[in-house]
Length: 526
Image (cartoon, rainbow, N blue to C red; front, side):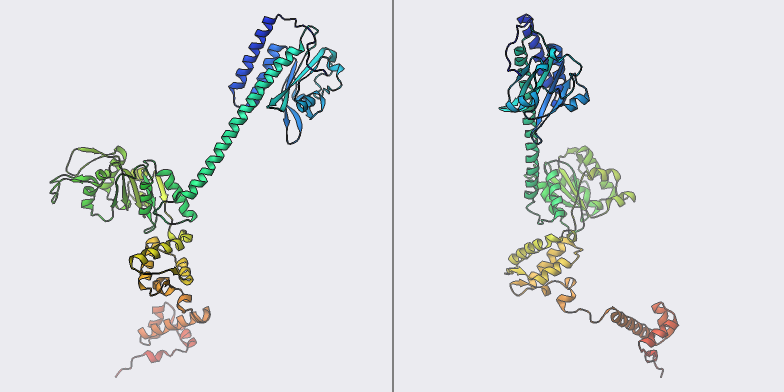
């Protein structure tokens, strides 16, 4: 193996060769720039080398740093099986030496070079003495990541040094393409990683200031608020009474770009049907009895801000039609007026009713339902977010201690257990009311279990656990029912049996079992 030196004068005129080289380099450069996937580009690069440089065969081999193996990634003039056999260790053969040393190598006649292994088997049956082999490293900085090689017909009149120079330029173009793609890939990965990190940080950070809770169920609500707040999308809040729908509506508005504009609230269930349209859309003077002056409606007052329509499921059919027009056309007329008023108020609605069932029953317009249900947010009931109960309890105790001038420092463990065990049909509103009452009746700095309402009391807290086992308890209940029935029937066994829904014979057996004398319930006649 020789280092690259001029072996013979070039038989082609210098001007013609330079033009050919420039054409080849231009096409190769265009090919590498055309696609982001380098694997799609290397094949056409080798074809261009064959077309312009008279190359018989060519390969691009890359080093796997993990395994230390050099394998052919792309080839020209080799079959798939020959390409697969082209594998080398570092320092093995000409290709292995070039990658190991980072220096190019020239073999004028492969038949005279013992380092040339012909690992692919592509030169079998050929006159090896007539084949020259050129191999140059593909380098990133000072590190060789692979090798570019070519076979060509040996000729005394061809300068292999010129081939080395040109192939080194091509290898540099390939290395630059690898570097750019690696940088782009690293940048994409970095952006993805940073985006994920920011999402996690935002998920941890974003908690509306007016809502308390760290549970997984509430985190989903927070994420949805963050997603929809800065848009103008219509929001439908679903959830049970007292779950906190109005607080979520506040959070959507005050975390939006409309935070500095009005936030107007309307309880659709609290307004009479005769006044709801006037409240929503306003009226002109004299529009109806009692309309002594022009009045702006809630939609007009909410211009540029948000309007919160609570209990939307209670709207009448006529009002539903007018609301649908506002959603579709962003315009309305005051009651008693023909003047059309534009509105850009964002609509947030809420309901605890099953709108889907109401649509099926014809009680709620289907087209209005679809207009409202653009971005639904389900607020979980308190029983579905029990980890938040201690946080809410602390907040309400502190709030009402301050309001009622109490100095309650903590909630006792039994009281916390009672709060956690209760099913809270009234949700957060019921919890707040219970704790306000408890603060009022407390006479020390600790809120105890007996300060809570009777509905929350447990057998353990009140020391009223039932005595005996299940059979004994059932027997006691059965005896009491028999006595009550006989007392009501004044000792008439047949009538008592009918009251209890059993036969007279079974009534007699049960009375005998419990030692009940039915005759003592009879009323003696004078």
